[in-house]
Amino acid sequence: MIILGIDPGLATIGYGIIRKSGGSVFKSRHSIITPVEPKIKMDLECLSYGIIKTNASTPTAERLRQINNELNKIMKLYQPKILAIESIFFFRNMKTALPVSQARGVILLTAAKRRLPIYEYTPLQIKKSILDYGWAEKPKMQKKIKALLNLKEIPRPDDAADALGAAICCAWSLQKQEA
Image 1 (cartoon, rainbow, N blue to C red):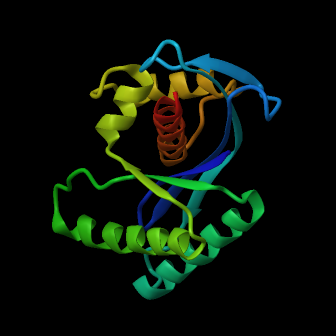
Image 2: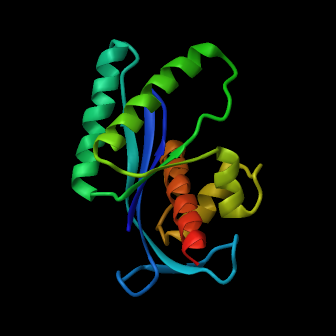
């Protein structure tokens, strides 16, 4: 099963694509046992990760269209079966909250048009599922994601690593439900 993880934003949207299997369907690079439930074993493989960037000098409507177009290209190429998105936890100022909410709406609509199930996780839930500690620092998260996905280097930028974290969290959550 292919999962597309998203870290929403307006200027920078992180994405990470992983393949989850129980070990019998796909040949995988890395087998893991989840920290949430030690008896759950699955294979995870990173297919791709990166960012979608929009220019601050471009009108908002055009930036939202660009997010939709780029996300559609990614979805067409990788054919994910699920979208895992980091939910908006809180914002320090309204100037940030509104544009990110608009971008998030476009992301959700893009997935809904493709009839993808959408799973939302707070940053706290993602960190807790991966490191068993909800207040973990980004460098620790990135290091763990690198190890779990057997990557050669820490995924960068942070937005892409966060998106991979959302996808991993979703994979473990679904595996636990299936067990």
